[in-house]
Image 1 (cartoon, rainbow, N blue to C red):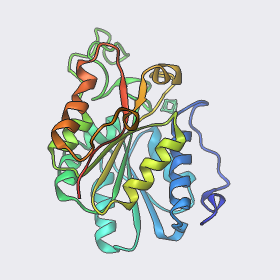
Image 2 (cartoon, rainbow, N blue to C red):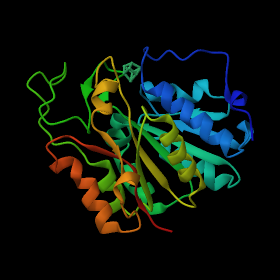
Image 3 (cartoon, rainbow, N blue to C red):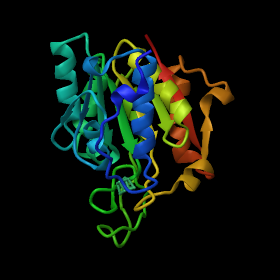
Image 4 (spheres, rainbow, N blue to C red):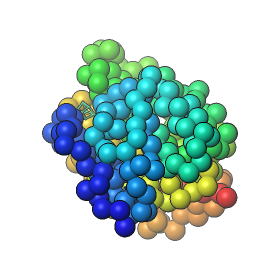
Length: 253
Ligand code: SF4
């Protein structure tokens, strides 16, 4: 196994104390090292947002590009050199807002990359503007009367756009998230994980998620059934208790 320390750099991340990005960064390093992938064989691609600094602080090849544009760079990288393990990163603002169009067509195109979206339901870098996954009515500096739009459903959108590996992870459950990322990297095609990420500065804290998250694996979910996967994806819009399922919603090969 490639040592976890191989991916460490001397620079320290500048994320706020307690930010979920630390956990997602660690889960990325654990996944790659446990799959025996060397730093020189991995490429991490991001856009703009708090999450987007992640390639700065992991020793591998990296590219930090335009807002919402990690997917075209990541797909091009993979097409140019199929031996590389390519992971693209997005945020709920960056990836579902500015990069929404790229997301839909990456699901259809099925290039063999992994796409991890840090979903904290706010634009953290711009101090808590509401994002595409913020709840309707969310009050922020940019929406003093509350967000007007209903939130986007990333899992349902990915499945209906043709993605063949669709999952949700949680930054507060590193072992589970590491397992999901490993499965996504090993999947032969476009693999998407929406990751619930606590943002104690402007979004929900870890306690909020801990009270709501549950594992699909413990609930006999059949991830090979697209209709059941879509039903499960819409649970988030229907359930009154805000229960948040994590795990593989849909997988087809
Ligand atoms: Fe993390 Fe939120 Fe701070 Fe950004 S603002 S670094 S997402 S805690």
